[in-house]
Image (cartoon, rainbow, N blue to C red; front, side, top):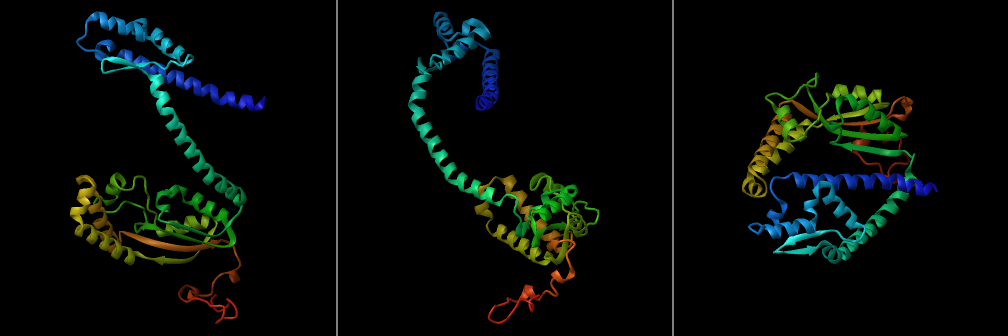
Length: 311
């Protein structure tokens, strides 16, 4: 009985939505100016239009017309449509296309099952487990300033006690988080990345600590991104003709300004790119690296008896 109740709980709202939606469509059609029968057969005698109205229920008013169609569904009569001076039965059209539709649904279900079952089993196996490494690249600009503590708190909850996090993202160099000069921030908000917010590196480190993470290394990559964006902008200019053949003039101009503007902003210290490596806050000092040597050389088991030199 519980299964029946669950099915009815879902089925009844679905039926209600279908009834309401189809009735509103029927009502809107009747509210359109002009005579539907005359639209179907323009310049036809009034007798022909009257016959069409009787056969389709157009002469029965809004509720009569809808009830004729709705009640016909239970008899397998899905209605008719007028084409090239004659009626066509929709049931015939549906019968022709239904096998193809069902075949597509079957293929979709097979693909879904092939993907869903392994992914579902994997999710169930991983549920509640924590990660050794977490990487976030170019994403936290969209989290929002007020949401950063919750964002870092969630990362901390998913991280193992000895795990590491790498958070890589664009930051502003203005401590009050104001937009870039000359309308650059407003331009990006409107045309490129709506609702993005760039935090200052100080704000990032503060909210990271509030979220339960300790910054272990902070690298400023502004120079690299200034060069990257400049190369992108140059490449854009060299391929102007090809790009214009792919997009409209508005999109071309948006991305032309955006790439050149980003190169300028990185070059002149309006925005920056910070890559932060962090771990769980509150750990013993002995758990931390002694130097950055581990970043710049690889430890080989055959060369070093232990990992101590790399720490």
